[in-house]
Figure 1 (cartoon, rainbow, N blue to C red):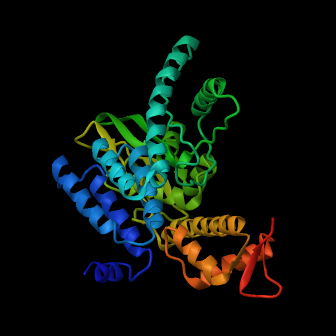
Figure 2 (figure 1 turned 180 degrees about the horizontal axis):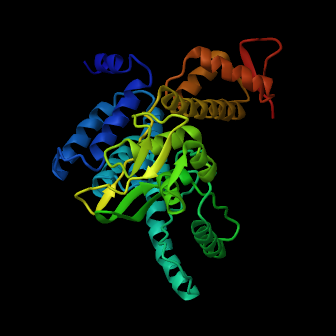
Figure 3 (figure 1 turned 135 degrees about the vertical axis):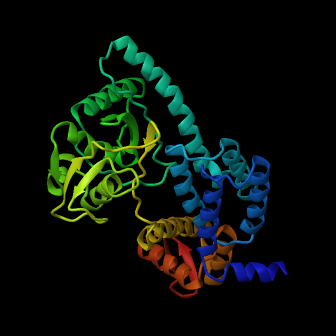
Amino acid sequence: MKQAFETFINKRPNKPAELIAKYVDSKLRAGNKEATDEELEKMLDKIMIIFRFIYGKDVFEAFYKKDLAKRLLVGKSASVDAEKSMLSKLKHECGAAFTSKLEGMFKDMELSKDIMIQFKQYMQNQNVPGNIELTVNILTMGYWPTYVPMEVHLPPEMVKLQEIFKTFYLGKHSGRKLQWQSTLGHCVLKAEFKEGKKELQVSLFQTLVLLMFNEGEEFSLEEIKQATGIEDGELRRTLQSLACGKARVLAKNPKGKDIEDGDKFICNDDFKHKLFRIKINQIQMKETVEEQASTTERVFQDRQYQIDAAIVRIMKMRKTLSHNLLVSEVYNQLKFPVKPADLKKRIESLIDRDYMERDKENPNQYNYIA
């Protein structure tokens, strides 16, 4: 029965691992009011039973890490205790190496809180004027998913604050490099409408667009693009969220659900909402096939390195080995399934790169090249 279930659940390679990671995300995300902490714990235990059967746990780790990053960075985690409980279960099941980067993400968040306490004290000591409160999360590149940096045009006040933080941080940690990730930023803006004052909880991109309306009454799509430096697709989604969503703080002319090249935008002074603080959700691209493929591709690349490392490690120790014995030892060392054809490609690649060679008298035997 166990073997039959294992065969059935892994019929589609990698997909079960991805789907389980997505299911866990839906249960650990804020807004999941289906379960109490006790029920959530039982649910995680049941998930782990299925998790034990899946191949390619590195695929699960890649998708889980991407979703965990979102939960941590935008404060969308339903329960820190549940997050750490899941981490503990994964560590018990797969070992410390499997969860080391995930644990590193939690450590970064805790350290960032301490850094911000020190930074606020630094700002007071320096008597830095200004009414913008800056909070920064310092992410260790090796722990977190890879984010493509996007250069945008920040207001001078924000640039100045970034420079102050950079001076403060590098003064304590010389030799380190800071890279700002604008795609992950979010802000709280104070806004004034005819109905009264509101606070808008928005992304950095939404912030850059809205701040333009302090300087003018109407802007075209092209003018906003030039002023903010936001990439076209991202800008269209940003404007859609501000002018076509549930909380329309901007008005679009002509009206419509899509953002077109000739559209113009004005501030909606008649905006009304029952809440004082309003969260305007950025319209997200649904996780496209390309994004899913990108995550899977990163796993594939990592696997290539792991296969290469295993082959070199074995050959360095054994010096000479037959093809069948090498394949057998590699299978024993790897924690994910590999097709014989893929393994053969990695062996050929290492031969081409002079890590090993075929024996001149026996083509089924390999020799390690020191």
